[in-house]
Image 1 (cartoon, rainbow, N blue to C red):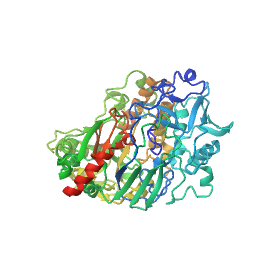
Image 2 (image 1 turned 90 degrees about the horizontal axis):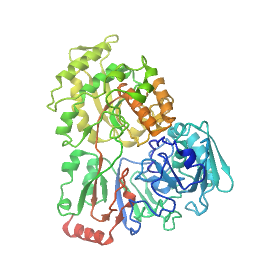
Image 3 (image 1 turned 45 degrees about the vertical axis):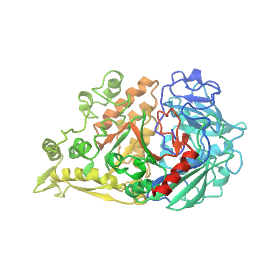
Image 4 (image 1 turned 135 degrees about the vertical axis):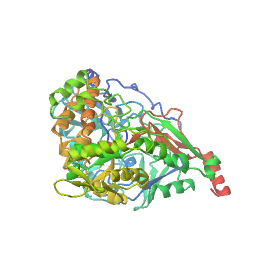
Length: 609
């Protein structure tokens, strides 16, 4: 929900007042019942409405790209491509689940919540000057659902129909009125030009810049190497409240690098301007340079209030060796987080234990109240531990001694039909050794995975890390052609329909879906359906905790770690607002200080940075 291109983690479901709040057309909607910003507001609090325009922001991307249509499975889309497309509504980055009119000037939810009417702004335009019309919205919805990424089919599954209403209206009708986030979900939809795509094949990759309507246009494409976006000088929505003080940089350029090591050296050499860092080692030691010591490079840690989501070493349950949960539980004893945090991460991280960590939706203790009531019908269908024991991943003392973990793992593996013979773990029935491949496209993960692999070898398990390029990695993940991989499932403050794409049985068979793990569980399917229909915020929280417990005790992945702040390094030519958004880093609110830029460039030239 935060960005037009980002696959949105869900919204919230606290709409107990929605029949009153949205029975008539309004300028925005919040799934928590109230909007922070009143009618007539001029800008978000976390922007500088007087920020100067101009300058260049150069960024880095890793790997390659071969597609400028980000809404299909085929190809690897270019970095930053979402900036050329506008959506019906725009999210606020300092509210958990609110959106305000962008292409749509108003939204009108039927009192019985069976449909929602979006009325388009008369001034809304594509970059070629043609008006954005209801027919474009209808066509976009139908095309994304039928030809777009599988995500859209699950996300829009409860929409019955979309139709033009009047000169500027588009009405979305719903299959039921209990999917409370759906009216806002459809507002996240980008709007594409029906006329443009009538002359182009939507489901084929393309390197021809598509027609957009957003704050930027593609200026130059060097396939697989770089892409340049230029701010649209007469952007139709530049002065709307949702855009005031944003999109301040004239030119945004992404240069592609083979890997992060090369990219970091390029940053220190001044080849690009801003770098978000996700490696604790590099953050601690990798930026030392004359430019940093001279103050030309700034390093900042910006706190955020985002739920951590879940990152982990994910099992592909489509592989026979991972179908027994005892096996999945056992292999988790091979990851010594405490040793890794001490020796590899400079103590920077917190161990992730919940799919909704860093939020009130994380399941802790044992289920009680409504959460217990939700889980009761599934007794006998889910592990008994769900009801009796708080889930926690294996924990060690940081010394590297995991003998107790090895004993626990081998006990589980023996119960699952694997026996330690010689130095190998073999299947009791087939005699086949336990071996698998861990697929990655980021070499930074090798140093994290290799100690894990070494520990697994002490179990008799032969795991091998396989590093591939970005394009091959994407193809293999889209087709589920992997044994284990580092996977990530981001969560918002209000999860909902996207959970179907993460864990739903139907998504497990759809190539390109986010159900990378291949989970097929009627219990999880039912929990997701009930979560989507949760009538209040408190009910949503209880349903998330119930789902969390069942996912935890499914042992579908080995949880990794998280950090509740953004780490960003940048050449000291940028300025940013005094207030940071709670739920985003807000790079689109930064601006270039031209005097500082001049000084930086002078020092770079004179001192050889």
